[in-house]
Length: 170
Image 1: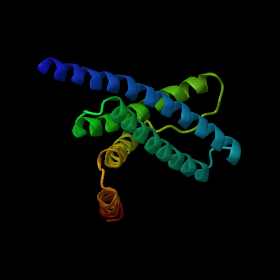
Image 2: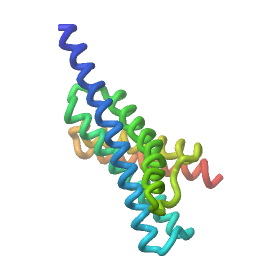
Image 3: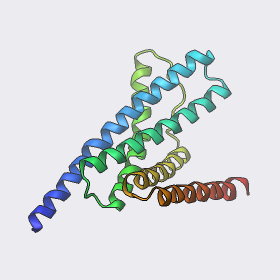
């Protein structure tokens, strides 16, 4: 019986090792495409365009982290919640680290790809949000009771709002 258990661990670790880098690469490509599209629409990287890019990158991060968590849940249904949550956070940090590399590749090809998120403060911010996005995605895939799931999501969102209010507005 312990052999089956260890093979299961190998399965979900293998799934994590495949899904996380692929999600990071996909995020980098989507973020670069978003930057290029924003450049075309706004005719440059104005202050407003940079805010749009930040919003777009946050949306894409939510999309990628949620997709990675759902994919890992489907690939390895017995993956522990803590490891699934940390895999979502790892997806966020790998995505944020790979995006500037991918943008640099496009820049080397002569495309104006705009601002990246390779600053330490932005990395921490995106990691924290990635962990929150991961937790919300886990609620969607693991909590069967819709009312409880909705309540847990609201508690997380409201708690995050309180943290932002206390931290940034104080």
